[in-house]
Length: 275
Image (cartoon, rainbow, N blue to C red; front, top):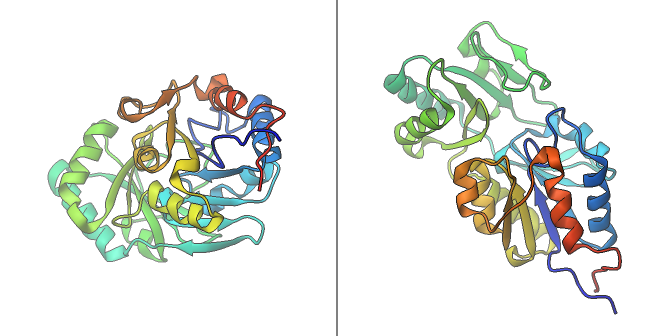
């Protein structure tokens, strides 16, 4: 009987991790994920992107499956095209949090991801999308950001670095929201207590998998809770120093097939999970 691989669940971030800079997944990474599937393990995308921004990507990965989206606030079932669960960010709390941050650092520019499988990303005047490939709708004024339920708020500042803005935001908002930094130019407010770890834990429970059976890949500080939860955390070579500091392992960059390098060692062609 073939040996059972050490991990039954592979959790991967998208931007800066599984995806290359042009939003594609390399053939080598796709082949490595196919090995995972043949072994009987599950691949779970765990991303800051909202559900509407992952549908086409999941299709490109070759299977309809679950995805943890919106920094853990959403579990999206690609097979049915619906949200299994969704945690909204209270819009009054979001406005109050923005006010507290601006009281400390002056004007910030904001965007929101609307809740739901067809939710839009709305951006106020002055906000620049960190990734031009992501679609967004510009609104005339900040009040327009709150016209429908939201899952999170994205923030940018004209002069502060991401690390500086995130630090100020955490100190200012307290328990109004959870502050994360998920990529260059991407400081976010999400529902208090919600992280990638909380979303991943709920998804794993649904799949009957414990944390010790989970292998997680990431590149930014918002992946730290996921690494804390999973049995083994692998940071990309391009990862933020805060994530590298808590990682169990560091692999090659997202442009250099870092995920595939690790998976090829664990999931050899003869591997199969046994019941």
